Length: 562
Figure 1: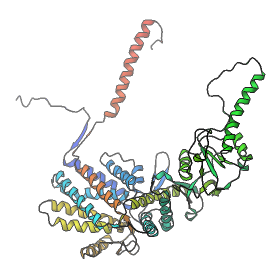
Figure 2 (figure 1 turned 180 degrees about the vertical axis):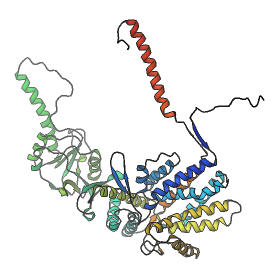
Figure 3 (figure 1 turned 60 degrees about the horizontal axis):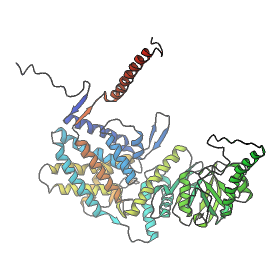
Figure 4 (figure 1 turned 180 degrees about the horizontal axis):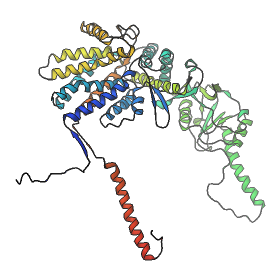
């Protein structure tokens, strides 16, 4: 009787939502599969694009997995992990963002029947980690190095890697044109591979083929004052002075007060202001520079002064562009015009102002340091140019990675099929349940060639059977899906290549995400946690209000309370 009357133990606040056990793991798997399904159709050269319309009324048309995942605004806590792995893939290697989400979704889908049958998630996690290690070592064995090749050979190999990446993007129709442009841009910045040294400027109008690469720096003409049009717009081998100061008359910032006993003294104060600005301008001219750029404003007086002396000037140049000009021309940004010696001045072979569409661009060509490049993108619609920029970002990242980790693997689903075959063979050597789990991992890897076929409108079952047969024969390790004919083809011979680091990173990240989601068996959601802080703040305010009212009441002052 006493046992029956024991009070119920309440651990959590009333209204707390808890879900745990097998049902929770299955629910998380379903959420992640739904996310993977939403971007499934964007994979590969025949992938479709997504149009995302946000609450601010902006529309984005994209084929890039990471961009779509960021814009989907996912709220499910487990599914957010897929957004994170897409972002990490994007920042680490640039491409393969759709691949990594698809693989993670497929790994989870394969684990679902085992979880429902009562297999402990830890057994699955152990087997999947083993399988991923085996797969990564196999990729390293299959990878082909591009080290030790001549510059021309290397350029053509890198261009093929860039073309493979671009083939699945909106600008895939002009992939050769852009691939060569990207390779030239990456090689131009050399070993200092900071991404911000490659500028991408967007100019609406014209067509894609009007895009061009500047082996130096290009930026839009800045705001200018009267006298600007009288300045020369082209120089050969000019010296360039980079400043971070204002060259204009400024009113005093502080409320300075000057008392004068004689009105004639007022003129001397005005003259002093003019002398300061003229002194600055005179020092700029004496430095021998023919181009003066400043991050801050260059006023109308300075513009006219420079125009009279055949000097080009531009004020309010953005920080990023100024730093790129400094890196390219070998100049140093100065915060004072005193001591402008030759060592701090930059130089380039040709400077010109050129009309590009409706915009005017200041272009520095033939820079001595050559550590920067600018791609000027042309195209019809703004959304199109935005997507072209994202595509080029992926291609630039891929070329950088291929240069650093100079090993490549065949694309088009070839490497995935070979890994799948290898893991199936390996699974037969294992006794126990692990054999089933590694087999399911191998099956999940086939999602890449299968999805490539589905997106291109081919019969995926037929193509996969041909691929399995070819890979099992022992000499078809490089065979993947042929997007053009709907059959199979040697991806290596067709130059469908990608850096091995893309695949290694994708398999690593997808396996980690899958193991992480499988290891979560309980979710505790406190609906009041968000409002709790608000309530606490409100009660604190109320307490202060009461105290204040009492104080005012005693003092006899203050407002009467109604």
